[in-house]
Length: 524
Image 1 (cartoon, rainbow, N blue to C red):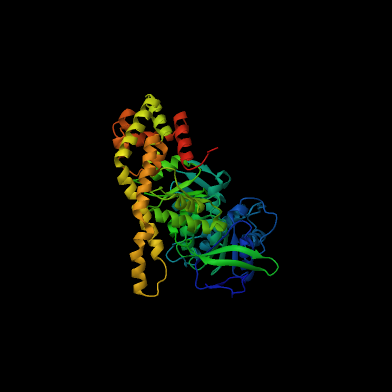
Image 2 (tube, rainbow, N blue to C red; image 1 turned 90 degrees about the vertical axis):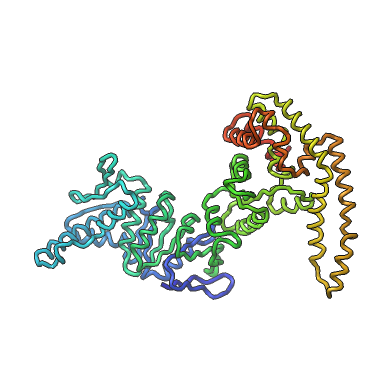
């Protein structure tokens, strides 16, 4: 079905969604999303059918005036039925009455057909009650719905308990309500569903709505939701992001959105569904320690490993560009990796956290982290820290010129890219510029200055300064930190750090404090 959307605030023509099966309306609280849905209901009032478990389970203060609403169908059925008198207080109870009422009428109709031998071989057609019972069992395999003496009863195969709908949980009532309610929508209806995720456990949400939609292929479903997990579960979905509403002109700022720029659908919707601030990190969930460590340090965040440094930076930017939509904070963490102070500050301004050490392995070599592990292993923490620091300083002194050269190489690579990234009138100009680059960049002067700086670190015994510039993956092994802590190897040392962080001991608190301080968090 084609759905015409409301007027736009920017004066652009209203959009038309052609031949759509699923539409989801998303937007922040106060964006005008509910008014947007009301506008659609009013426009398509002769086809509109609106349902909401949130409203259905509690006594309503007003009647649903839409044609063929459950309220209207209930009133007509109750008025015409000599068999049932039901003063149902909620829409859910009215729906149960309708199911039982229609079941009774269907049985009477079948009995009349039997007398006339018009039952197609004695096979009774599926009733609405049958369909609900079948779908209920599909969703809850160990449960059954039965008819008994004009009542709807529920059984649990594990307990053999039999009970009425009153004893159902709110989640079970919501499932029953949605299954049955959709059956009462007229042919080719536009079914508006408010908060389809309310009361529904995420483990069954996708399966439930898939079954419901398959049951009514003739209908178009328009969902008004805050739950991005639900949005991502709709495979034929057109997602409308409602951003703002102009009351005076009755117009909206909205657009058709995908997953949000450079982020994948899966990642974007997964993040929004978490409802916690997001922390993008390097590495992967299986093999690197980034996600494992940072998940235990920054517990208030949902940590998402993205692989490369560039992916972390780009994803953080893209996600924060849409903060007005999802209202979730986002940060990234990347290794320092020989970046200058100017580069580091630029990243921090973009919500990218950069530690005061060269790389993540160096975080595990922080003095307070070493001491905490030593104490946890019943070792002399001061002695262990002293020995490790001494080993690292000797290693750095030996590698000093090599490390300086690597820093120069990094800086030259960045600076050369900047210098060449300009316009040239002709190839000769470019050649001349490249010939002059050596003098302009002066790598030897940079190298000699770094060597002097690094020598000062060694002379002063400045362990923290060394950790800030020393990129050496073998440091954990060659420093002998694992053996000094009574552990077999570096992997055992890493596992020990992670294990400590899973608790809330004094050692765990010391490690968290030290690592957060390394990112400038919690410093006084």
